Image (cartoon, rainbow, N blue to C red; front, side):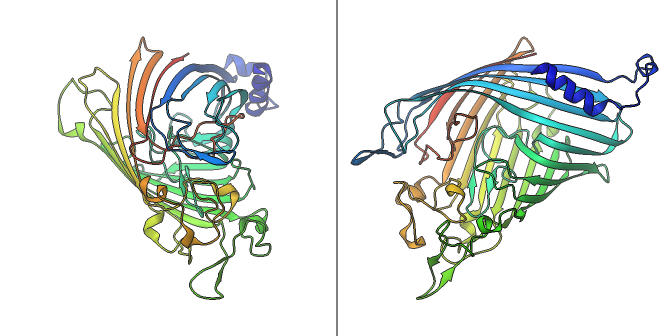
Amino acid sequence: MLRTAACLIAATIAPAHAAPHDTAAGLAPSFRMSGDVSAELSYVVNSSDTALVPGSYETTYLSGMRMSSLTGVLRLNGTYQKLDAEVSVVGAQLIMPPDPTRSTQRRNKYSFNRLLTAYGAYSFGDADAPQARLSIGYFPFSYSGQTRSLGSYLFRSGTYPGYVFSGDSTAYLAGLHFETSLPGILRHDLFLTTEVEWDPQYDVSLSYLARIGVDKPFEFDAGVFFDRLVPVYSFKTSPEELPHLNGTIIEAGGEGDTVYYTKQGVRLMGRFRADLKHFFTSERFSPQDLVVYTEAALLGVKNYPGFYDDVTERVPAMIGFNIPTARILDVLSVELEYYGSPWRNDPSHARPKPYENYAYETITYASEGTGWRGTRNDYKWHVYAQRTLLTHITVSARVASDHLRGLTSDGSIYPYERLHGYDEWYWSIGARVSF
């Protein structure tokens, strides 16, 4: 696999007319290999997640359950003048909670390997200080490096239905990414991406992110995401022609009223970060200490009668703070989130409206609601600590009540959220070795 990846990168970045004297002139392609190995053990202390068992519902199956993961990532990077490329693969062995719609008696053990990234990029202007950069392929992107679990809403969320995730701030996008800084303090990121997750329909989305003060003490970000701007299968994205396909017709407003929903929509995001060390002079602060960051988003600017008639129910918001530890830890972060949606925080099986309640029963009308968990899980919290040992080894621990889901057999995020209240939580410990 590595030999194949190397050949792919070489073919991408090495010009066909390259002459033997290019090597002597220092113009030959250069390659670099890196990677990491990580292990994590998690324990669910309390969860009321509902599982279907014959003849009844089980709400205690997840409490006291252990999960574990052993993951390896291998990256190969190549560079030739203004061109660079990356191919990376990931492999893992996982022990995850059972599927609550099938069985509660045994955990799932998975092993998988898959492509993690594959992209090429061209830098415009000076290669050492480019004026702009264009990336094509399947690439990682993060605009909120401080985020440990909550936030990063622009790319880690859904529109009609609205849902959010937790975990690392990095999103993996497929398509084009153009970035530039004009003027220097204002960074622009423009994306044209296609959907490749969650039973993909391959709809094309357009998004734009503006950031002021990146790597400065104070940073302001604002973004807009035109979700599914160009649908590939319009009858799935906006199933008005085949309303029975996803059950998107409901009675709303008054007698005889019919509402057609669509998964197309516009998301907005705003973010602020402040490094308060700017006001102090001390050697006892770690680089990430005293950083406060906050973010909010609107998951769909348009109201629809029935399920989406209250705009405040589509606004997730979070705040985080890195607590100083006198350099004992690299970082100790605390994050809080509020998301007042009364519906399940799940992708709803590719439907443009909420589909199930917490007992996995189909919702036909908005008045049916989702039960008591619909308002009990509005608040989330996350505490994270990390320490670097011997440069290439990091150890970490977390205690959280976030959007815990787990992974499926192919490494994708499981669709169902497992914690449904601020008093439902888990802990985990982990270690990573990089090279």
